[in-house]
Length: 282
Image (cartoon, rainbow, N blue to C red; front, top):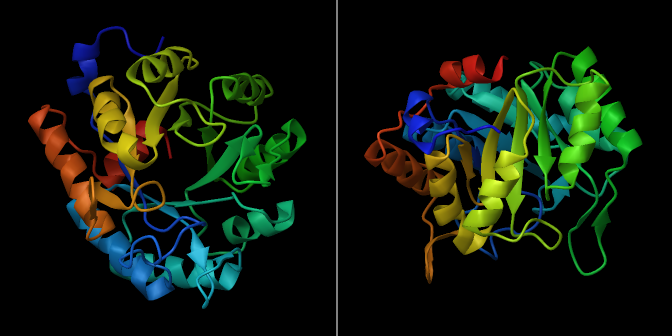
């Protein structure tokens, strides 16, 4: 069990990740959502100043569509390194692309990201869209990331995906501390509730660090609960474009600022990027 006494949450600094863009909705959902590299970098730097220590990066093409073009990711990476270079960079490998297309931004940019995601297990993404995420794919992604010195973030959409994550651990394809994202609210994601968050976290393997990702209106209550349980949190426009009911968020940084303020009220210090690196062993 990852947490023995909830009161111990004050003993570890809180990692705030921010997912500024995502790969699905765009400015039609919130006109403040950044799509082009310059916009994305502006948001990342503002989020870094607000307390984020990790940025989860998606890229869009000139029309605002999800892209895996390494040159676009390189433009974002260049901007990060120039303007807010100490933040931990995490590239997505999700999306409806071939395996090689999904991995190209991770391995063809310099410097390479310190983290990259692996979507563990099948997940429904739309009316007729399913992410396959087979065991073979997960093994290949983990193996190649290990060869390139990139730490995987294990994105688990429901507790059954912990079985597949354990397989990667037993095969020696990921190294401790294992970095998990517990996802709530998608079609085949875990139903968002306090009890489900506690059960999900309680079944994580030893030597795991974890963050909570919850969609829409569930983002604020479940990330706050994760903070109390000793986990970490992810916020941002990929998962939620509202600040409160009926009010669109002004920026990703506004969501980060609120998370940092809540952590401060709970007497849990927010981790700097270098402290996040120490916690995650990167």
